[in-house]
Length: 122
Image 1 (cartoon, rainbow, N blue to C red):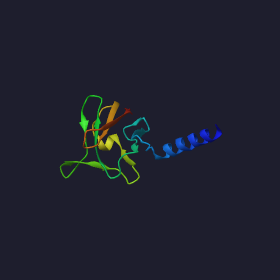
Image 2 (image 1 turned 60 degrees about the vertical axis):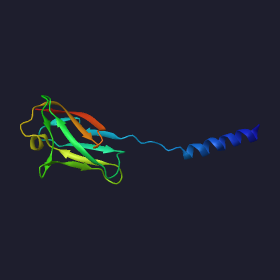
Image 3 (image 1 turned 90 degrees about the vertical axis):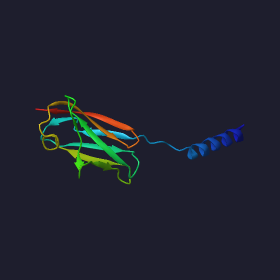
Image 4 (image 1 turned 30 degrees about the vertical axis):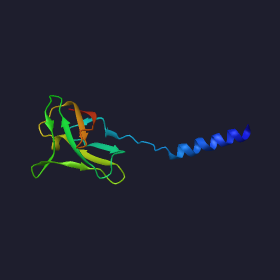
């Protein structure tokens, strides 16, 4: 009986080491609320290394803001360790934007997206 339990335990441990573990993408902002002149840091981890992410910020009134470089939407390139960090200052990056709850959305080109809300206060 003892041999059977030991063999079973070894089999379970061996199987557990072979089963891949999935690491889900995480997307967050710090601080969650701040003034227009305060930087908000949008960060992610667990993303595909080297993948481009499109970023869109939606104001409380529905207006969308996207950064452009040479007339094309700017993209965030995920670091080799699966992370990224993008600072945004509303007064600089969203000139004339309203106060209230905003939504930031970062997307892979295949349409998989992650969103986080942040609040711009007076």
